[in-house]
Image (cartoon, one colour):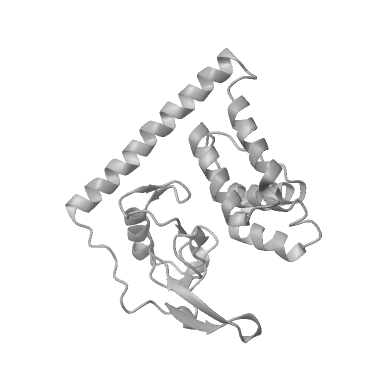
Length: 227
């Protein structure tokens, strides 16, 4: 952990990202997004599949360390590490032993099996009763919405993620953040151009920029079963 001056010379303690090792995270296991490698830190074991990241930490770290392209040519909204974000001297990449890689591969395969099973289950339920499958999910979201304004943002985000996982409804990191913010404060983005642009910069690709703008300005999210 390292401290450096931020806004107003406030000392901010930063932690190393478990994926790239650069000290970019204000905390650990708080679902913060690393601006250098785009890893969302949820604190799982390296061989466990991470839903927000779409892969295990073992595979994400290997992909990051193997990518020798300039940062402005890499996928995602990433940037080069800054001087004050130098790697923690105690950080070391995982040793990719056959056992560790096998565990990570099995976690990936297990996720694919569960994902396909959930997709088929929901599709069958919708075909059988178009209005029925989402009743419990919608009720849980409505209950959370009713008390969200009295809860911290991170708690709302965590509960919304739990509801999503429980009912097999896929949420991307972008949509999870957007919906949690709006549930906590419906005016969070309204009239706050910098907040709006910050969300778009972190989560938009050239092909999705128009869609992201529509989502953040209207609060309307379109999602399906594609990751």
